[in-house]
Length: 136
Image (cartoon, rainbow, N blue to C red; front, side, top):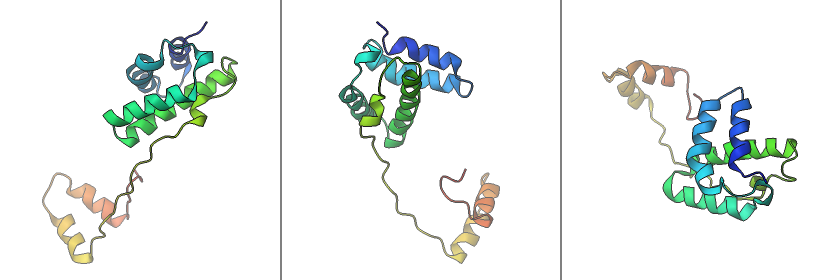
């Protein structure tokens, strides 16, 4: 019977985009915890336990990335007929906390862009293009 780890490695080898990135996430976070489980027997509660454990070690954003990789892999396993449903569809993923931002006034912006720093050009571009978090 197929274990979670074997098809994951096969899937990574077939992925065109981000294979190395996917491989590191799968090998560091998923295979050590669930790799020996039979793929067809993988349950949502096992995935939830993994996410909860990772949430104690990593940020919510990192757990969301782990979820995205695992979800994509298990979607492919469904397409290949290896599992009937994707158990990651049935779990709660942690949400990043919304941060309060302070909006700078015109004088504060002038000080920021005139402050001598190796990032001065970056600050200037962020201000004049009204760049927001997540826009990069």
